[in-house]
Image 1: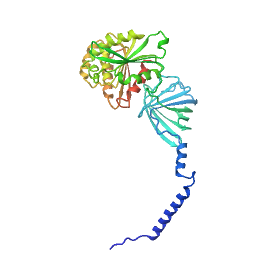
Image 2 (image 1 turned 180 degrees about the vertical axis):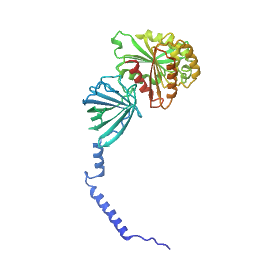
Image 3 (image 1 turned 60 degrees about the vertical axis):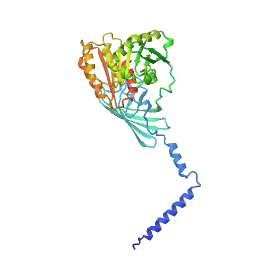
Image 4 (image 1 turned 120 degrees about the vertical axis):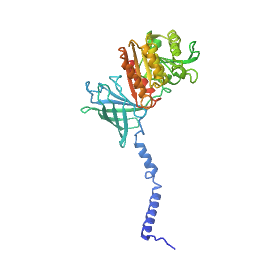
Length: 400
């Protein structure tokens, strides 16, 4: 029978090491400062780095260095250089001197050592501006504050203190404006009842001015978020969020199955009701929609071409793959004179409808309608996630 051969010296050494470990552990057990738990607590206490910075607002106070006014791709920055970090790789930036300056780009969050991280930002080419890449080095002194430094151009270095705060959700936000909720309108045109909600800006009841209005589809999902975006963007706009009605009704009202009736409902019933209840500027009306709602906006652009009822149109990742030939026929008739005075904001989600939205934009551009101004932005996010950045961006572009 085979008998295993053991190395006696190796076994002896292994036993000694094992006994020594037991002795060391038993000797440390009575010392609070030397316990493994105490060391772990000390490390945790001194390490302030957040696990990630998604859904955060990073305010960079500039205390040293100023970007020259003529630096290509950057605005004049005086006291703050702010980053709104969205989900995934979406980052928005603006300075205190130019609230309209906003890029969509990519970022990475990389630990460099104890309490130090590099926030690497890549901003794609924007119009005539080249692609910009820079790194912000953040040194945390606690969980939310610290010092920062960045070489944002070849010859300009900025530094100062920073504050990192979670993005406030609309549900937790304390509105200064008025949320006038839970109204209903029964349409004699579509033969359906729609709930709707209204946001009124902060100074509505202390002023006598007429306000621009944004009418929005799918109000059951957007009311608070859109109202929040309007107020935190400091825009004096009345917002009317119209719910879809009974579940699934949007599939009829927002597509060619029933969109003509729905657009008549907006013009002949919804708008007169709002005009009778609130002080609105009839020359500054907008219609917004997402997905099928964006498809409705496409129809509305041609449907109201003659009346010019709406000044602004906002379409977010519209479902333009739906019956494109039929929409083209309608538009060929409506735009026969290449005459349309309106502003159209188009956005797309790279993961879903970007190809269809881009194609629609190119179709419109080929018509060469001189009074149609198109704003386009693609976001590297999903279909639903495109709504929030699109709303913020549309407010900046259409209401500077």
